[in-house]
Amino acid sequence: MDKQKLGEYRRRLMDERSRLMRSINRNRVAADEIRVEHTEDEGDLATISHDRELLYNLSQGDLAGLQSIREAVERLDRNEYGQCVNCEEDINERRLMAVPWVGLCLQCQEQMETDHASARHVTTSVDSEGPEF
Image (cartoon, rainbow, N blue to C red):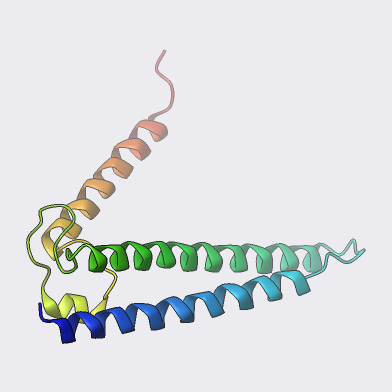
């Protein structure tokens, strides 16, 4: 990949990093503004709990995104950007344009998702069968 394209990817990664940082900061401010009032109204308490959980989940997603961006920048710095971290094959440039922080080629991503779904299915099946006597 040429230096101009790599520079463009770095810029896009830094722009996304800035966007995520702003989002995390907004969520923190919003979470601080949610006060537990002295109320016994179950509806109010449920709304407060829901809002806090939503902000927590949004922040967790943003933090995961920041981690992916950090890893992508490290790959740029090591001249490994655009290579699958699993099979080391080149990642399709259209995929990188769509998601510049992606670390897996499409085939490895699909395999990982299949493996993860299979593991979840096995765990769920075992859990739902109940104990053996």
